[in-house]
Length: 317
Image 1 (tube, rainbow, N blue to C red):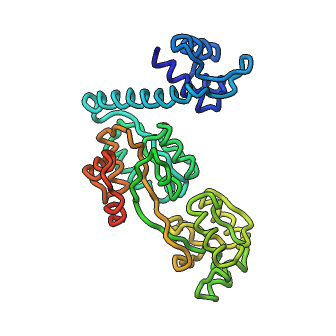
Image 2: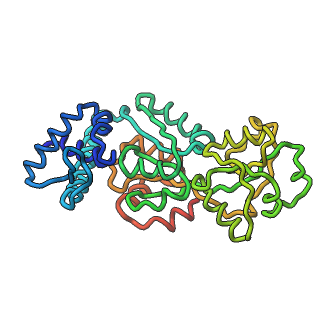
Image 3: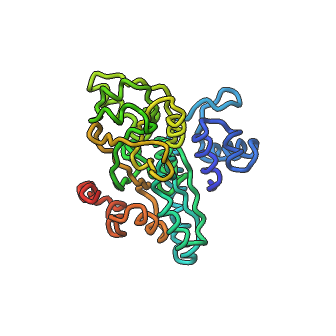
């Protein structure tokens, strides 16, 4: 049994049994992967995958166990490499951060700038996606740290630290009648075309629930996963915008006015997520503390070691 065979098995499963896609990601040939899987199955004297002719159609019961163990073994191999690098190359390495557009655009820049200045030889990669994609990238080990709202905290494989809380605002051109019709209510919002986040994104489910509980259906004419897209179409006069208050910049968004909506919606929490079985390099601790200064290394280690941290964490937010 060889490590690359385990990597092949894992990647085939990740790519929904598509060997050609797995081969492309692993920078090898489809025939090479097929041959190695055959050799592994012969050595184990069982089938990892179900087949219809040459086509893979599923994972066998024994294969599911092997995939779980292969994932664990490959993760520990990666941790061993990180231990070696931590003691031999403290100032070099790589770090992948998965996050949403709103976090990457409005919350992370100062922390990222400080990190790069402190560790110029660490390659930092930022992957953007919706909260579910962010959580899954971290869960699969494709990203070291995830920053997102709501969904990420529901993944059992992840240890999540609450970073900060935020709420929402309404934006519109300065001439919009809402500015002369305060206080803001859900009923008033429902009277106008609304441009907001996709309801599966950045706390959108909270918004959807609040309107539903009030017996109202907002007139949503456009949804987006990007706050800048929302502001663009609000500027065009297509509707009012409902977005995270951290995404409004008075200097950059001078053509728009803002109305606080925090009295209408419960606050949302942005979480920082890590795999529970990860070995953190020293510079990873520093990035976490730049993103969530309320957690020192002791608190992070306590969480990774299984110590109950939820009460402490939420008191720190």
